[in-house]
Length: 110
Image 1 (cartoon, helix red, strand yellow):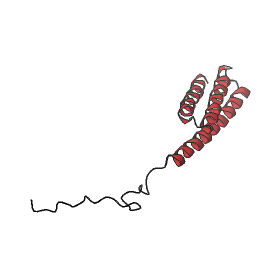
Image 2 (cartoon, rainbow, N blue to C red):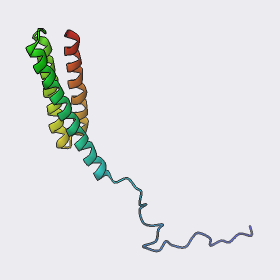
Image 3 (cartoon, one colour):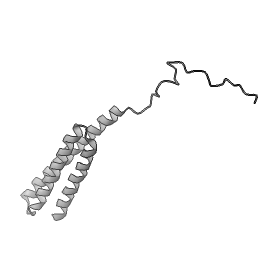
Image 4 (cartoon, one colour):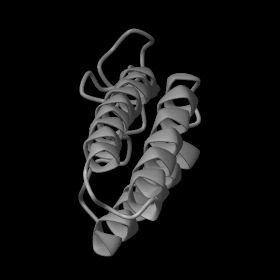
């Protein structure tokens, strides 16, 4: 036991690198903002695609269930975009999945 007994026991001085938060720490605000914009953009894009597919199927010889499924899926994706903009990104994600699934079911009837 020939080592120093006081090594590493001095108190940290305020303002040093040991007491400050690391610079690369994840800031939740930009991540939440990015999630909101991603939900908004994805919901709007899927909503427009669903409406376009609904209009195309409406003018064709497809059964009435097909354009209705695309329109319902587009409505769910539009609702997801609104919820994503308001910060409800988890619910928006599930609505995006449900809206895309409804549109896929409509595509199976075509």
